Image (cartoon, rainbow, N blue to C red):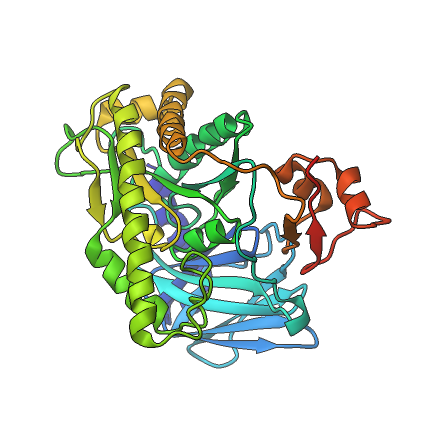
Length: 432
């Protein structure tokens, strides 16, 4: 009935807008996804489209021209709160071309691409809006890891935003929702542990690229990376159970070529050793040694987590599997991917919709991480030389919370008169 009503509405719009009859592509809708570092604008399309992009200043705006396209309506009713968009306008600069103008609140760096249909959405044109930074505004790279009295655990909730992940067979549960919920339960457990700190890779319903996820973890100097997913096997509803993955050797080899193609970007990846002044052969040897050790540690971490998950329910695989997942390809950080259950299994989908079950899953993952870290006890006290480099989005209160010291003690240690911090500023972190 709902699809019939939408079809009638679409035919009515066509009858009142003759351009829709002639256009091959119809822009049917506009959706917004806001992430901490960018805004994603998504145009739902009836077909795949050819497009061109032009960035203009004074005033700042982004022009997107679509060939042989027409809009089903205006987008004036959208909520454009946020740092980037003022409004979205449509027009026809010449026959057969639909022009979409994004009026902006500040200069931006755009990224555009088209997406094929998935289980939820049809053809889409995606426009990502990022801050256009000057050289003075660039975020300062994080220095080599400092000695700390705790371990940083990066929690990566899979999928998000325009990428829903798997969809439940019976209730339509979306993987992106479940993974963020389990990640939140794991964060709460880690927050209560004085020896651990959580780093949430994704905090809301927005997409983070696969390459960016381990990069965020490295920026935060994470000691362990855990990516949370929920599997699906549409052809067989009886498939069930949890699985844990580490990086495969083939995945490690392909990643080595990517990193070593630009040794400048690979600086400080290999246990704090820069590759910039090494010849190609030595750089690859160092990389291989580091990656072999990290993969070995990932398998150990994975076994601890898998054993804990096996204690609370059925396992899909009784040993840690290995695959070339992009999020696992960090050469200096044990990383695992956990498929907590099968959304294609109605029983497991129903369980995942309950908080009690999600809490049990999070507890199993937490216990596995703790068991792994026990074999690597921290053997140092916080150093008086610990330094934090201020990054975009940092505040003095968040920095104090991260290191579990008072704001006043940080201000005293750095002779600060106010609570304000600036990007690139180096702050001494007191021991108490």
